[in-house]
Length: 182
Image (cartoon, rainbow, N blue to C red; front, side, top):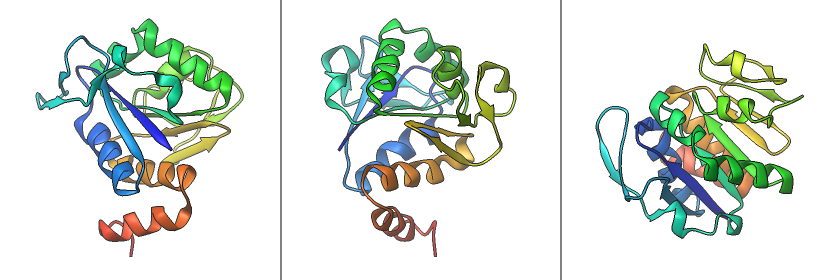
């Protein structure tokens, strides 16, 4: 299993780094890819991060899951990228995993990917979840779509992805090793 975590300027640091960290702890091959022309990406709280690669240099179709961290400006940059939207649509059509947290599920909603599905998002973004059935669960999985609410749900989001990509035992082990689970 290979995970593609997309980084855009303005990303929510907790949401992005937690996904890369926990997925790697779970033994999943992760590529943190900048959607910009520079591997250096700056988060919402001015924390610079160097991505593993540029999205333009990655063959997204080789991955099992694409992950969208939130952050208002990060979400706007991700949603404004034709390349990102094309990847999301290809993954969805192929039944591959599409995961988004915080404000970024709105990208899925605005592009018709949550139609008829249960989903969640950061409070206030429900109107963007066109055709979706929003709820306030920390993490929601419906079909191939995984959504989560925000920074405080980042670990639960990561563990759910580990469970789906590998198995529940690995997710529990990672959760226990990090003292998130007893």
